[in-house]
Image (cartoon, rainbow, N blue to C red; front, side, top):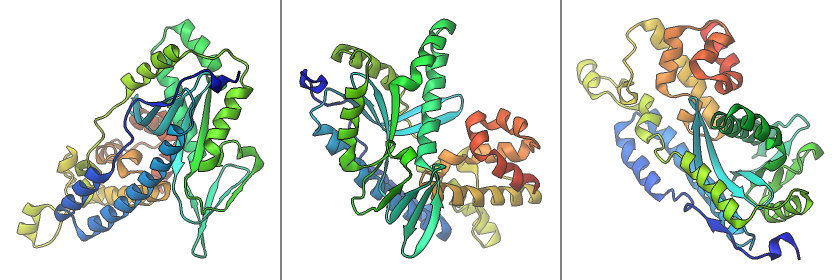
Length: 337
């Protein structure tokens, strides 16, 4: 009798994200924004719709798998100022699977170094690697697990972490032509390869299988970590908001940071630096296909400007080790040239 012949069906412990309400809110919020903000919101709506279509396909594949798994979609975990936004966490009897879904247009190449390149409409462009994104999410989960245990248990479970956790980047667009380096073919897969890949990984694992009751206990822990109070769009697009009072006084549009809970920048040089950092953030979140606040919130940008760090260690103290490793070099280059 095979592992998945023992009974049990997939159970979704949360309903997958429905973007309809978010899209309505975004459309309504556009009236408060500048014309540049309108374009940014339209880009976000397109990204939301494409992502939601891909996630629906992944959810359907998992529901139809007839595997005794527990599935947590749209899991948001925070630890020490960092956030992991996980599309799907799948708990199976022998392994836990972190799934990042991408619904992209064009042909996809993954190089030996794990770099992602997309060719679309005769253009080739790079994008932030979902492989690296998954790695950072796993590191955050590892760190949070470590912090929630005693020293000995943290050491013991940390040693087994890489054995029991596996990540997949699932490309949901069936029209994608994939050219994936052999080193990453077990991580970057098509939608129709997801369920077979989980079955193979489970069949190849030598460790004893967890019971359904144990899976439920594991799942309860991660649901406790889930942050449902996602940052709102008011904060995400605050940099584009029209300041009505300044418009009345000066006869032109101005952007205020008051919606993000930070003070306005009065110093001209600081204002110019904020605009540089904001422009870099815009190109970064668009390239990575993530919300602006997942790169830096406005409050974080102001904190960086106020502290004026000159070294990576100083920046790390402000924004944490993971963001410093990912974005620190760019931020210091913008600050000091």
